[in-house]
Image 1 (tube, rainbow, N blue to C red):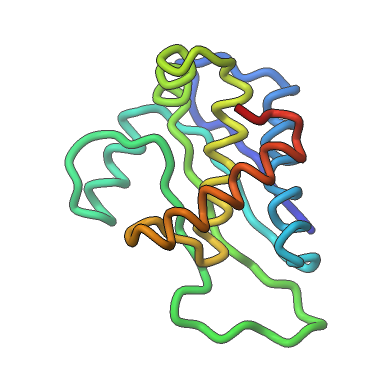
Image 2 (image 1 turned 60 degrees about the vertical axis):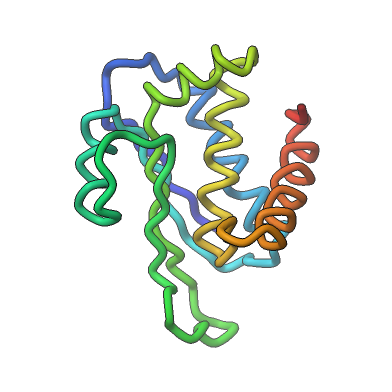
Length: 151
């Protein structure tokens, strides 16, 4: 499993420990979902950048906390020996910081949760329907517990 974490913003300080935690969170999802030969990237951006992407790709005005861009949509899974490039998870660190304060937990926990959420989206999880939302939340909770970051 290969996870690349890149910080492309300067508005919220990002320590190496946070980068390591995001990588660990993504790898925990991939391991839990049996994607041992997979590659994904996690990119930290600011609200301006994520708002631009949100408008461009979802036609939604304004920032959001996390966007996932899957390379697998409507594509068959490759053979077992091939490395699978899953896609990119884009996280607004400004939104993560704000949400962490709103929920009363650390920026680390919020960034890890958004990473888990985003990587699950790359793997096909969704929350548009009630049943799908329940399943996704169950997987998020289980993975956050594995990371010792449960609610």
